[in-house]
Image 1 (tube, rainbow, N blue to C red):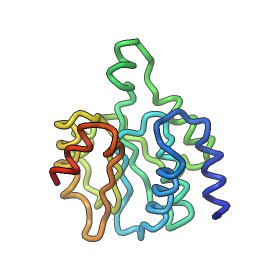
Image 2: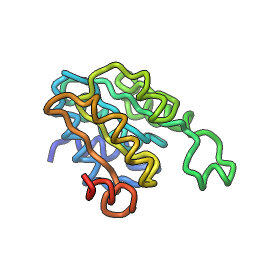
Image 3: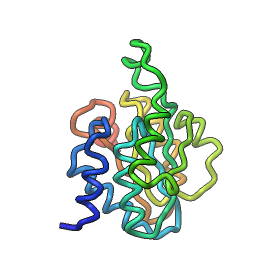
Image 4: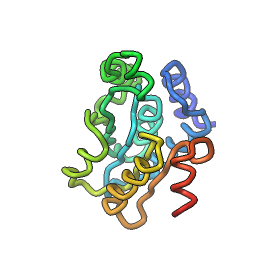
Amino acid sequence: MDSRIEETRRAAKDVPGWLTDAEGELLFNLAKSCSGKGVIVEIGSWKGKSTIWMARGSQAGRGVKIYAIDPHEGTPGHMRQGEPSTIDEFKKNISQAGVADLVVPLITTSKTAALGFANPVEMIFIDGDHEYESVKLDFELWFTKVIVDGLMAFHDTTSWEGPKRLVADL
């Protein structure tokens, strides 16, 4: 096994999130294979687990920048419970993983970020709001920004109805 993947597994192990090691390894390899013709975009970063996997993969490849988009307000359940913003923990986790130089946090919604985003996108990982209309909006806003031969990946397409339905519809 690639020692960089093992190192990444250790770096991401204690970061909260719902990403399996197998999913993380896939994101690592996808980011590693990016050519640099566009940037990597992540919709829904929360505390940085998937961001770390992609950034470490990018480090092992061509060092493509990752734009991590999240309002850092947590999930609707977290907001109802009064959980504070997740941005400080996100930044701490990214820094501790040694990838802060590759990650550009955009503390906003996917929609707001998309409206002003001018960079070509080589890879996008959509893991934001899981309601069908929200996932569909993320797809519609970002699909046209993905370069030819680029990649659009979704999380939770087997376990959450919104992403599952969108992928089935497409």
